[in-house]
Structure formats: structure tokens, C-alpha cells
Image (cartoon, rainbow, N blue to C red; front, side, top):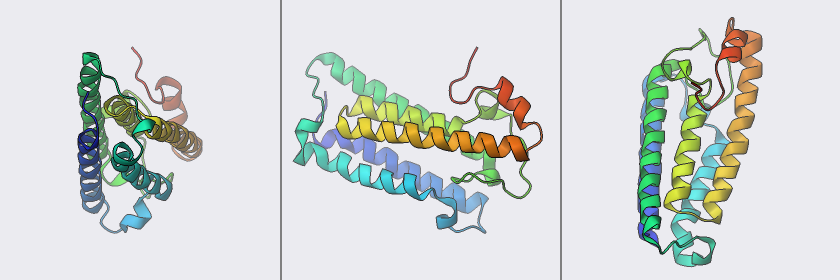
Length: 190
């Protein structure tokens, strides 16, 4: 198992890549709105604080992480990086599919319509599923208390946002109730 600061490098790289891609897509598809208007402040703040702790934890508080000395620990980390990358690819697919309809806030936008194609044909909240995937991968790369707390926060936060979206869209968007009845929230079904 890779430990110490080397364990944090792929995580920091993925987070920087995510925010660069995210900012580029926001500027490209919704140029009239400022980044502050588009960002979920709670999620962004918690993410940046978590990145600082994830980087510093191996150096200052190594006892908060789980060290797996067996060979399968490295296999677990490699699988975690793959899952992180799959989550990132899902985020890119979702964002490219939504284009100007994307927002980190729960809101009905001008010209909003029911999106039930692409990743939305499989699940109602693929962006949140992508975050769950990425955080599960993070937990595999760097198993520890901080990562577990971050996963717990994300599960609570994004589940709450998904419920708010479902309530808003089922009231305001024609066809959303029917879409909700046949499309699962986070995990595709056969």
C-alpha cells in the first residue's frame, strides 16, 4: 500500500482536475452567471477543507488512516483510482449532456425541460452518483476517518439535494413524476 504524502497525490490531482473541468464547463455553458452564483457553497467549502486535511493527515495525524500492509492493500488502492476516474468520467458525461441546464443549486432554470436521455435515461441523479463513486474510490485509495466523514457528508448532502430536486421538479416540470416512477435515483437497475 502506498502511504504518506504519495497517497494524497492522486487525490489532490483528481480534485484539481475536477475543479478545472467544472469551472471551464460553467464558463462555457452558462457564461452570464458568475461562478459564485453557480457553486454550492457548502459542498465547495467542505471539499476544500477536506483536501487540506487529506494532504496533511498522513504527515501530522497518521493514526487517523488505515494502513494495510498486505499486497491486497495496493490492489485496493489501484481499484480506488480506477473508481475515482470512472466517477470523473461520469461527471464529464453528465455535464456535457446537460450543457446550460446544469446548476449546483436546486433550481428551475429558464427554458428548463425534462432530461431523460444520456446518463439520465439510467438514473435521475447521475451527478450525485458520480460523486458517490469518486468518494468511494477516495476511501479505497486512502482509507481513514477523514475520508469516511467526507463520504458521510456527501451522502447526507447529495441525498438531501436529490430529494429537494425531486420535489421541485415533480411540481414544476411536466412529465417528471412519470420519469421519477420509472427511473431510480442513484443506482441503475436492470
